[in-house]
Length: 463
Ligand SMILES: [Zn+2]
Image (cartoon, rainbow, N blue to C red; front, top):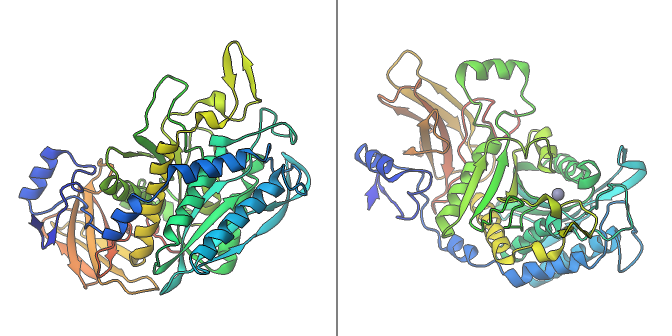
């Protein structure tokens, strides 16, 4: 079927849109954010290998502890050996792709509540340089460090299989898959340290990104992504949670005032990347839900993505649907008949492969698309119509643009209209009061960027 001049993929229109609503929308000549079928993404969706993921988690667990302050000299035990293993893995993947990865190890000396004496926090980072827009960067991260009950215990076995060897395995597997392809934008694969001591590794990489002048379009952070059996008895291998900030932490008082009058509480760039990841993953992965959670992170807890947010970069966090806290940050023991500890027995590698596919699809789609538009503005108060205008962001020019909108209470974009090559669009008889609007950039091949909400609230690029 053709709607508004482009093909609609049957599986895509179901995303975030009930059938009744879809029928109504089709009657109105509009449709959900249907994503054109891309053979590249179909191939990537099928590529993650549970055996590869298991091998990575097994190798990392084999280092005994990966506490950030543990042994750095031993070839077999501790954070140093684990980091060198990750570096060697990236270097091997780089050889396999003919030198497409460069590996760097940014570090900072830090001290803090859980780092009593200054210690070096070292990240292991592989960079797959973009072919035509290398300054635009898609980052994927997981943290390699682990801990037991006492966050200062640097010697006890701390397998950290789910928290967060699972996330590191996703990052390395995504590197293995995407390094077989070329993308306009740069993709950065980050294996972080120091998370359990105070979220240091995310800051190390975010600071490095800023110092390099990277235009970071997102950090896709993976932390605790391999479990499917919750402590509450829920077993679910079909859902992955995705956390995103609603308003930007770097918002100024002036920008907050503007947002109060114009909206944008649910439309930070981070949140629109989350919507994007959901749409792409659910288009290509059967029986799979990316469950958007409208908050920065789990209640009262934190993750490495927040360091990117703190510098104004979009960043989101993936976490499994059903956590079991008996298998996080625990001394290995059996107590009252209950087994405690973050061991590999509790990681579901078939599920983890879908998490890897979700990351690979999101990163590949974003890296293939043009940069999200800049300077998006909107007008239409006290008129029946809504006008949007925008400009192309630096980088490879977009082939066309597409305006999206949704009810103010809808969680994801439901309506869209192509704007062609124009830098503005008027939606006649679509009242600005009643919907939330945004615009995305589209490549000639049909790869679409995330949607950008107007003004500072939704901007991807620092002003
Ligand atoms: Zn963690």
